[in-house]
Structure formats: structure tokens, C-alpha cells
Image (tube, rainbow over all chains, first blue to last red; front, side, top):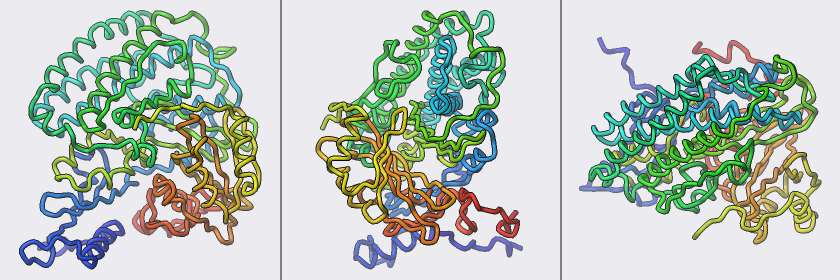
Length: 404
Length: 164
């Protein structure tokens, strides 16, 4: 009756994990407890595991409860984004960028549009720059809410309450964005030289209402979590990313800042109108799970500050260059350009090579999660499997961006 | 250790000068790609040597590899290394030409650990084989995929997809 449930042939990643066990045993490093021939078990976490936030698959070698080795397997969400770019005009590609990192899609759009503008030498209208900062920072808050919410949900039953509260607040941001762009997540809003629509009537007031309401909510969340003994025990001192790791593996974003490195591209490679705005770069000292969580919470406050300043300074004027129509066909001069943009998860880079035609010759995304995920084998090894779940939640991965 | 970003800020011209003065003999070409990138072309054989010295340089110190991209130039392949210097808060690009007939280049995995996955991606997409890489498997495409799709002459054949 169960004939069709055959053990599948192990794939390359599992074979590698088994090979590493054999090598470790041959070196005499295998843990041979109680005279058993082997103690290590290879376990597949994912790609449909509820705690991996997407289709991440970890081939974990376990020794009892201890994680010995981790082999991340990615590519389950690969949609050939870089290949698609070669057959589409620069303009046609904007909605596809949205679908790379879907939790902060407007920031990805920004990185792409900024790269094309730099390549083609286009200017952006001043009002559009402010609208871009406002939307970008609102999405940063929304993205951090998902990150912290789902991460606390992994930790304890307490977090299941958190995740609902945080998704409730994120909904307000998504409503604001829907009013502005017509879409909740896949915005297709930025245009070369500006944005698609101007702010609708009353939007600024509604946005201010949110800014007034939200700091109270952040305080509430912190009251719920920051002094919770279970939460502290599970997060403090676990999963430490050292500064050497940051340098070696190119970790960026809140994960790097939690280790005490004040790298923020909004400050260090300034773009748009960020030089005119007053905000702090949030850093922490220890680089453990708790510090990464703290960084995200404080960054939400900074984002609120930035949005408020932008609403105050918002100039009048057009949101697109020249006529009402966006430049649909642009042909940048031959050459290449790289733009790194501070995505909620780190440096989201776009590298474009142009051969002077209407289509990009080569387009590459440098995704922050792809680089952060590379640290996983080092970060998870030696921890208990339950901590491994907490650590992978605190790194905040979005598989859409990693697999592209 | 307090790592400070941009403790020794340098202009693009100054970076280019440093590259020409200290690495000039090993580089084939140094040029400034407007608006903000210094591009250095390295011979295949000298890549590892230049990479190690770039990383260890006390003044500029390109310690972090940001990404690697394989590019198909039609006549040849090219491996592009984008490296970042914390001290000067600048980046440069190393371009290495890889002939299609023998698409091989030495790995820089042991110099910049971040190169591991990026090189796997370049192998997966463009088919540049990195000699000495510890685990050069496909990364984004499935294990039994045939061909390297970001090559300009790649043809997608139905018989390459038996599962669909």
C-alpha cells in the first residue's frame, strides 16, 4: 500500500553533509557516545518548515540537540530575474524589481531606479525625492515590523501575540501605500526622474496620524518583550556576529550595526535628500540576538523621525520630469554603474551594464540577505537546535531576495 | 575593536593613483568609470596575488568582497569583483577576462570568505569554473540543470527540463 513512499535519492547537499560526517569520523572527531557507531543525524529543515520564513532549506547535522553543521540550500524561489532583464526595456523591468524582495519592495525599486538614473544621468524632481524618502522609510518600518513580529513568534507563545499586533500596525502603513500607489505590496510606483502619482488629498494628514499613534505602540511592544525573562534568556549572548564576521562576509544593515559598526549607506554613501535630514545611526555593542532586535526597534523610531521631517519640508512642484508622461524608452550610454541602497536588511545593490541599447546588457542584484545567509554555517554551529531557530529568525531573511 | 567607517577618506583620483603606484606592475589597466567607480583590469594569473595584497594594504585595505558577477562579453567571459574598503569608504572593481575555451579562474575564497557563494553563483549562471573552490556546486538552479543561462548564446531546450 505504501510502495510509492520510497526513500528518495539524497541530493547534493545531503550527500555533502554525509560526506562531512564521514570525514570528521575519519579524523576522530565524531562524537561516539556510549559506544554507538554514530550519533550524528542529518535533518532537513525546510523548505516548508514554519520557522524558516519562506522556502529556505537547511540541511542540519545534529548531534543530539547540538547543531554540528549547517548547509543552506537556496534557489527554490528562483525566478530568473537577472535573465529577464536582458529581454525587457529599462521601464518594463520596474514591476519585476518589486518581486525580488517583497517585504520592502519599494526600497528595491528605489535601488534599481536610482541606478538607471545614475547611468543615464537623469535628475529627479525635488518633490519626488521627498516622496521617495517618505515611502522608503514607511516601508522600512513595515518591514521591521514583520521581521521582529515573526522572530518573536518563533521564540515563545508570547510572540504569537506580538506578531498579530505588529501585522495590525503594518496594515496601516500598507493602507497608506495602497492609497498612494494602488497596490499593497507590489507597488510599481517609482519612475525614472520621479514617481508615478502625487500624494492624494488628505494623505499627509493621515500619515501624520500614524506618526502620532505609532511611538506609543513601540513602547507597548517593548514593555511586552524587553523585560520578559524568557525572551532575555533566549536572546542575550546567543548567535553573536563579531566585527570580523562583518568584514569577512560583507554583513550589512541592522545585523552589522548590532555588532557596533555604524555602517549606514544613508549616511556613508548619501543619496536622495538624506544629507539634509537629521537622524541617528542606531548601533549596539554585543551583536547578539537581543541587540539585533533592539536595533530594529530603535530604527523604527528613527524612520518616524525622518518621515516627520520630510512631511514638514515637503516642497511643492512636479513629481515627474517634464511632461506628465514618464520617459518610457530610455537608452543610457554604454557603461556600467553600481548603486548600493540602504534596504531594511542591508545594502541592496544594483549593478547595471549598458551597451547603449534599450535593454540592460547585464543586470545584477547584490542582495543583503544572500550575503547574510552565507554566515549561517558559522553562526549556527555549536548552538542548540532551538537557538538555531531563534538566530535564523533574528537575521531576518527574505527568500524572494536571496533567490531572485 | 571599534571599526570606524571612512577613517581615512580618499578621493577616486587618489585611489587610482595608489593602485597605479603600488599595483601598477600587476594591473593591465586602471580607469575611472564615471561617476564613482575605479576599475582595475587584472590578468588571470595575477588575481590571487593582487587580491591578497589589496586586502592587506595598510592604507586602503580592501577587506570586504561585496559581490562577484560573471559577465558574458560575447568574445570572452569576464569575472567582476566588487571590493569595499572600510578605511577609505570606497569601492573598486576588479575585472578579470576569462576566455570561453578555458573558462577557469583561481578562487579568492580563502582571501575573502564572502566569495564562496558569489563564485558559486557565477559558476551557476555564467559557467566560470573557480579553481580551488572548496564546494563549487550550483546554487540557485537545481543540481541537474544543463547549461549556464546568463551566457548570451544559451538556448533553453525542452529536453533540459524532464520534470516539467
